Image 1 (spheres, rainbow, N blue to C red):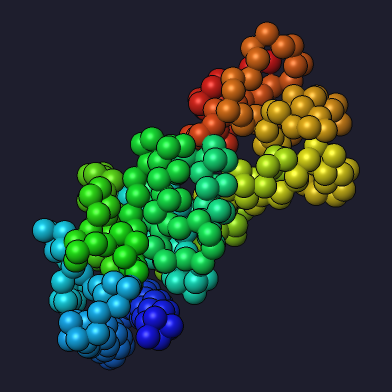
Image 2 (image 1 turned 180 degrees about the horizontal axis):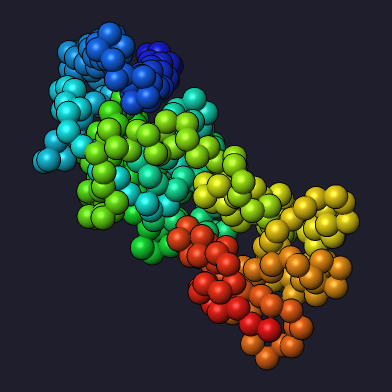
Length: 371
């Protein structure tokens, strides 16, 4: 019976992930192609069918549970204001959606769900980083990149469980907000039918409106709010401004730590830049020796093979037109006479600070340019 219970638990988890992929992608299609009545009606019918499937599953589980108690917890669809799990749901998507510009780290092992959530969040205006498991998420958190909220699935493979990963992440970033998402908790964060103290949960399959409202509930009020109709033509959800496309600056990003290297490149792509990775100063010099037409050298300061300041000195000798930006957890020494113009970002930096640092030298960055 125990083995059967675990199998049922796994099926429940996968089923809710399937529903989330279906609902998320249907809503993305609705935002782009649902303007005519025929398309809107059929997409709406499909979304309603997903809701009915979710409610049918939760109803069956609630009816079954008293007669067949198991070690796992019930699947959940909605959490009430009293923070107890309930068997209810519904669709109400009229009116405007609340947007934001904070940075969110999405942790999800199902890549289809992850991709859908990233698109939904990008369409709401957020900067999005992603990790496939708890260990990778902690590496991103430790990288020094600014993160406002950790949005993580409850049930993921691996030895490190999501609640423990979230606890460690908050220890590293004390101001970090945490939001769990799951359709099946396996007693990870729900006990006695109620959420553990201090835990916030968005249950799968959630709608775009539920996601938008829950994020603003966790992050607080935001000035970045627009109507759904206005946002559809300008935000990432409609295919415009795709990451890494367009005429953004070509930026050579240098860092010997893979986590901040990947995170920085993702942030740069979010604002339309075209980054290229280099995992060492030697790799950076090789890239610059080629025919790559870079605009900016964006480098860590402390690296094992060569310091970022020495790398910049060598690059300036052959490519004086290249703009130089240092990124470091420590202040770049002011007393060094580098002989070239530079700007610096102190880790962890926000997306807005990164964007400002890439503006023309005449505009202020986090630290002023120096010679």
